[in-house]
Length: 377
Image (cartoon, rainbow, N blue to C red; front, top):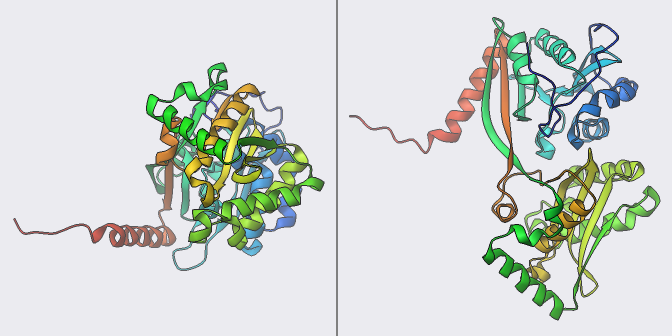
């Protein structure tokens, strides 16, 4: 048996026992079919408090990053006890199933399930497709791992490895003054940055929850700020990335309509110096995108804005501040807490599984082989 259901942030979730028996599985291959699943998906996703398991995230990702004719979304169970694997089928000789949007957006993504029984049914349905499976970054507490191992026992190989986790802060009243959690040197750095900002006209923070009608100019400004820094120089800013930029524009519009979007700015001398694109879901502050303008680099505007939004989240009574992304060095000044993640690869015992396993082994050899020196002893 798989363990009790947990939320996407690691806490236990209490769910009612499903009144309706699980009724089998179906595979969804078109956006129209996916739209029909929205209402029941949203019920199942109530157990998850991260953006990545919500219907809107997958629906927008599927349309932008994955062609509708390769969708392979598996749904199992009933409306009262549903589980969904938001997958697509890759092309090429080493064909496999992968998570929609997971590589393009580089955030940890899980299957969606409303109960442990639904998760077991879903894993069995995915295993019956007899295709290799790749989940690049799944929360380590996910029930999917044990369910897949059970479903594929004697029928395939499941390989799990630790991968990059996501930093986070467990908030309480003390975080209403974030500086007190920093060491002496970091506090001194922030005070210096604030003094520089004061000489340039003073710093002011805005946390905006725009309506869809108000969104366009505010989001345009956020994109411009991000592009005015190193992301603009490297071509990774949303304003310069057609697909990811379109994803975040559409996602912002949906989140604005639901009242969960937070566009945050640090203004120095009245001019935008740093930005954050975030959402509030499940009583948590989810930081999806950040950026700052190079001309204000001396003021450390990114960290000043993080300080302000941590304070905002704590004062709003939110449970946590979720950095997402990866545990970058600059985040270490704020927290050492990391939500662990794992990568999962599954290979059925058939020709496709053998081809995928050989392709993955060859790729790993190419990646690491150059650094290995062979010598005769």
